[in-house]
Image 1 (tube, rainbow, N blue to C red):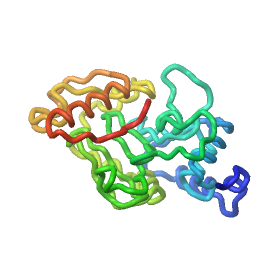
Image 2: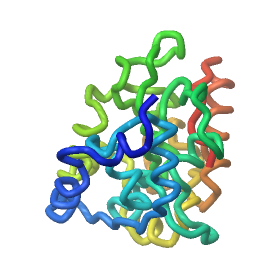
Image 3: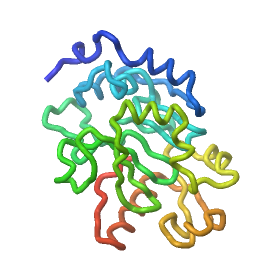
Image 4: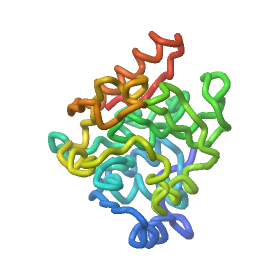
Length: 242
């Protein structure tokens, strides 16, 4: 086990370069203020260093709101405002004090979108967890398909892809006229529930004809998990605790 100073006091920390990359991003990015104590505790629990983009984010900021909050990348937010973005530690149900036996299980949830989509970093044995991809690869749980897909990239490449504007093509067909104003009205613990749901033939045929309402992310993710179990008997597993 590495002590916290070993994880923080590194040559070539990722944060300065990451800040530079965000300042020139091809998509609007809001960087939330962070909580140093939560960041340090999360780094220690995860045993990742500030040299990595994941470590740099968790240690130095409260998270990222990308494209008017469409995508929420988790960090270590300051304060406990109602509707505030949860921390990476909260979303992944990390222990309140360091536990050397704790592991993120099937994968570490690193971001969620307002549709109920989940980006997770694959764990050490994806096959055992019944997930695609390789260890350390980013996966996406697609709410319109009710399943996981491997994205073919690790965390750093995935983050660069997001900042370069990759979301526009990725969500092609899942955005509608006026989506930005609807998303901006949500708090950071809410997502959009569609009726008929995104995975239905009706929504695939005419997304604009669906109705949408704000719900807590926990409710939205629970509905996706229940639907997946009901329709194909597959449990997507952990999608985040908040």
